[in-house]
Length: 297
Image (cartoon, rainbow, N blue to C red; front, side):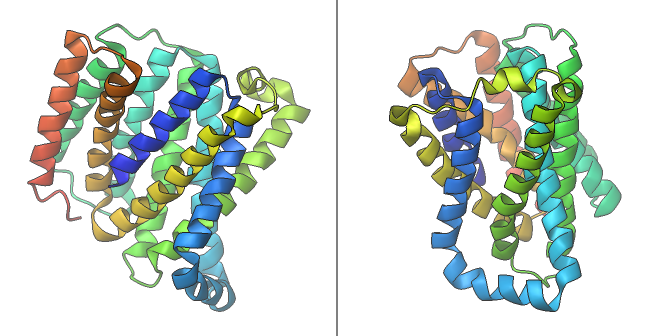
């Protein structure tokens, strides 16, 4: 379900950008909408645990807040800089390397096993993702690629730090989910403020933001994307709570396949042969992963 809702959120964002919505207002409205979604769906049940964690275990509360800030705030910020400074084809593939960084941190921090099956699944899925996102074209290295790789590290490290806490069973997953938009938006806006005061520090970020005006007829794209983003976050941490970090990140590779299918059905896009082969590789690998013991740490 995590991959499905993530794909729906990405597809809605793509529709919004095709319609001309600007990145900055879209990002902020989507996060605020996601926060509202979480307040309705999980606050009534998890609110008391959130309050208890803050009052009785403040150190753990702020440790999780930091992890969410790294994942949702710093990771998002670095990815936007990378997108501004590299080719779309590079960005589309490089974000998938979060699979590698997640498994690496899971091995180092959580001591999850590195098996031949897991290595084979990573290589297979990345090969499929390469074909699906690049159509088999060569990638030309760019300075922006380093920022995207930094974003992958932040996304993975944040999730692994959260998973480490979930393994103790001392925190309800939905409590951490409530923190995510708060921490992510705080870090994102703080870094954005620095970038506006010191534009030379962050390369081409200001250019990709393209202003802050939002046409009212484009607002539904941001709102719908935010709703789906909120549900995606719920399933993200519930998946982490129930399975290994390696399994979660490997199965998330199904997302580009779902996005491609939606683009074919609703945007009239067509896949070329390398993309069809790539999607097939990811699907077969996903079936093998689901049937394996990777789901367990």
